Image 1: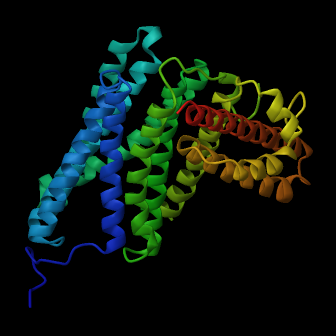
Image 2: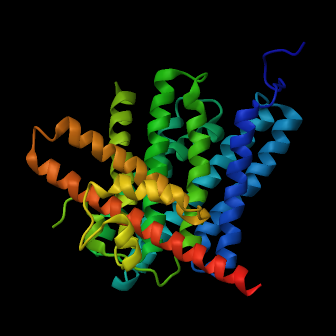
Length: 242
Length: 133
């Protein structure tokens, strides 16, 4: 019988967890394939890069999990570092959407500078939070950075949606990609908060992986359904007509 | 306490993004003119009304499905359910809410009618291809 310490090998997730994981990876690949098929790979390169990274991380996590178990140090370190990397890639993807929306204002350079400053600020804040309280500094930093970037991502998506409405953006693809991202971030925040109430062993632990399936699926459908020329009526986007 | 606050705030933004997402789905089909045939079948005249939705959905169920409109219809269906609930529960408090919900449900009905139009056109194309073979 194995002990409780680091390196302990636990069983794999249940069939439902594995199915959700598998579906999420398939949807991530599906978006990349759809982008290539619809000749949008370069236009939405940061989104593709994020999903390619996510697919690779998903496969690597599966191999580490099946070799060492989900309570092992190897899996834990890989999980937190890869999560920080993926959050960073998602942040870059979000900033690229800002460049798309604000492109006509020629504000690309400002967006990049503000994004870098915001990232450095978030990293500095995360470091300040973990520096005095923990022995495993780098792992805690990766975890804290990931959490804080998710929060920054939610706020930035909200602001981006405000810019879309203000600038009366008409590109259907762009609008739906941003809205899917907003749904993803807010759903993620809600399920994390729910996890705090309900504990680890409830249905809420499947919510985050399900949201991980939703984002690439929704992006794939958007890429498949609309082309770059598709336009919508911006006045129809606001809930209360102006 | 903090978790509860985050939960409520994130639910509010989740709802805001969901409503906007559904509206963007409906806005993308608002420019699509309905064929005279679909107008006849559904009874939609110059503009769709809130009461048309259920009838159009019943007609959609009779028509063979298309893969690419299923998720959009499901999302709009959830939105329609929310509007119905809002109308029943809160309309007595604010009459403007009732007219807003009616307008939104009419948009849902038009979106479903456009989906029906596209399904009929798609099935016609398939039949024509079969005839050619």
